Length: 484
Image 1 (cartoon, helix red, strand yellow):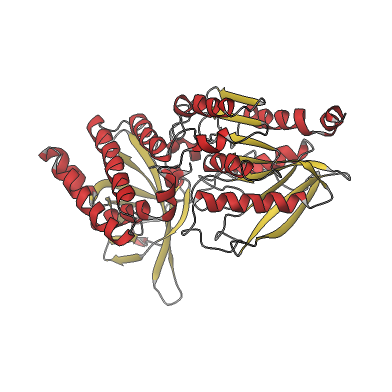
Image 2: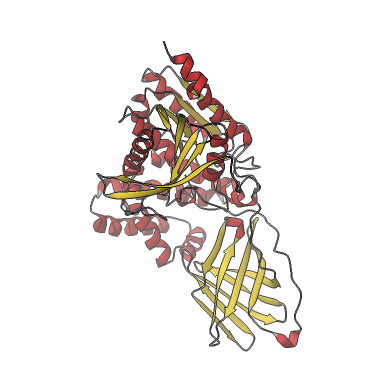
């Protein structure tokens, strides 16, 4: 899953570089301000950029490089006397207030009613990510911008097709992204995993189609009203589109899906003979609610959260999921979820309840209820991928990272393999790759907070595992070996 399916748990990162100072008499909020927010055992880099219009009005943006967030618009910026106040749209509401003295601001950062000290220094404001694997043109292959329809759904999907040099026909991979609204590069935490994967595969002689999710970037449709089943229909539309291209070997078109995309691949393959193989990158092997509860526990543990709070979060997920199952009408379900949440909070000790109540503002509660009431979540919590896996007869490669905290291999790897074998699939490869996280980066803890701090976008071990497996079965010489 991407981060929309789990909380971010930021880790340590140093503050941004400090630029040339101004004198104390020139106190002015315009510029970039950088500091490190200490939240328990973790440190989060915060950068504010403040501008002034020709009319004198102040505005700005906020970056949280530690979490891969750049350009969050500030709702308000007010500077009176020597007091700088800024508000920003984050869960539970956010506010910063501090006293400006020359090149420094001493103040307080508040989110969801929780104040933490945050001192800022004037700096370069450089939140640029170093991503050495991101390919740059010119490319040794063809790049085509394409559009194709999912006629039944009435949506048109926009994507990029990369083709090796030569006449073909080429084996082809259709890339399907993880949960949350994703562009064709699966951009997150400053990384573009699908850009890197597409470049690697195409250089290895494998054509690649990657596309924006429906309702995202260049694609039409309503993402918020969609479920994993809808995304499987979109993936089949993508497969049909490339299979009709004379440069593509229609007998060698498969789906490479990451996280939720790992659910989509078997769903699509079990519905259509056009899908000739499936690669699951961190694809779940158990129901959605099982994944969410386990990932919450692991991520909270990795972030040093209090065990009691971790247990409360797990119980709350189960309780709210029960409401969703029992009440199909969303308005009634929202009322019951709010009531259930308050009952759970009241069951806590006075000390823990005070902490939770400070965090659970009305905005936070409404956001949580809205997410769990959405069509995607209602489908996801009880979707069991083993059903589609048992009906998947094409070759399957399932890769997991040993340090993946979002789709833990201990929970899913054996379930994926078992379901495929039960269904009679005789070409199944399941591998757990050492020291890799959910994005298949080489990682220390596997916590999502590390994703933006790691320069590597995707481990060469994972890239080569995918390209080698596809080439062994579907490259030109492999096709020749399959011919009678």
